[in-house]
Length: 145
Image 1 (cartoon, rainbow, N blue to C red):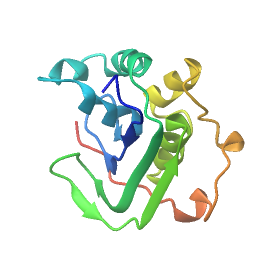
Image 2: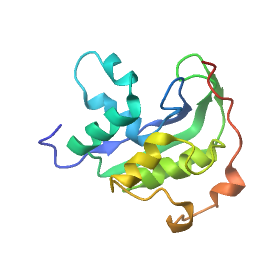
Image 3: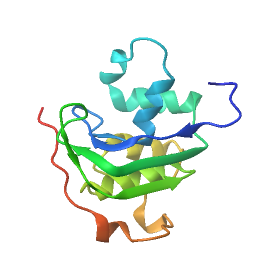
Image 4: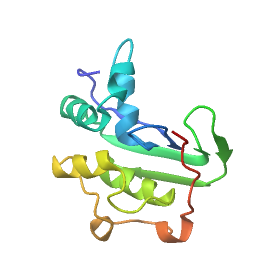
């Protein structure tokens, strides 16, 4: 992975149970970890930032044609009918979290990723081509904890 010429990150738009709240670009990078990844789920927000210091995708494409609400594994498939792409994983995660009904700043690891200068989470500074996220957004059912 570290010797790759290009890292293409293709997560599915979905709600996640636990600290992360969403499975999008940043969380999908856990796929780079060999073996058991369960250690990531405790203190997730800090650990995902550590992971992003080591590996960062060049291009992100979130598949939201059929998304998942309620739970990352046992949830309900919903037709969100969106694709979101960009080279800034923080901006893509910010847009996607808002598509699922989260407010700006509500998903902590997206806020932390911006603070660590991995990208921009501020909706007023993200250039969106195509339909405005506000016109596509709906509140996804959250995971029960």
